[in-house]
Length: 327
Image (tube, rainbow, N blue to C red):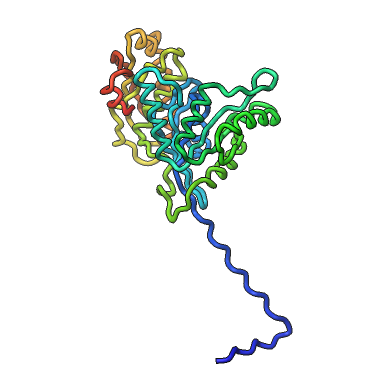
């Protein structure tokens, strides 16, 4: 059959534009690693817009691996906030470091956090502890992204020597300075991570999921956070929290509901118990009040919180105690 003659028109019609291809979904797991107190949990909370990881100025606030899920159009990043990497001493610290290192083998991308800032004369010296963290990340053989946190602490020109100091230490897929406090460049960090993640036909988790932590677990962490914020520097490392009761029978709907929580605070010595209780119970009352206020915001209802301090000698060195506490 011969070709049909084209219709006679004064102008040839323009070809129709092909519809844009739908944006491919990228989804994967990212481990956030770094030295203690470098801002891993603060970044996770900023990305999620919710407090799923407790934060304090004390190193080793995070003791376990915490999952936080960020979902946006065309993207789902499942973050693992990990305990700070350091040369571990003691059973508890060794378990924390083991948790962080094991996570490296289970993710698609590793986000290494370092702090911005320069030393005397504008010099940047990468310490042995940070070099060790970077070496552990490289051993994972996963794509590496370097996040330079706290980028709002000084003039932007001070970031250049920091980036230069780290640039050649690993085959970084990207280097992104950002601030979790102000939110500056956090979107750029997410975009850099997205480029390293695999394409996917489906989300890894439900679209509305933020974390895999149960409210009971979050309650224990909120109490421990207040212990770390309000007690002496030597005490927080000797304290663990276990929720004995999480009663939702009166929760109902809205702010009129009530959740009853009873928690045990474990310490290792009687002297630590005295510090935690405080004079006439003032310290324990203050910890309970602040933790309850945070939990009421989290749960969206009234909270009755009962705290009891118990001495369990050397709990941080006993495998059975650590297992009971989920550590």
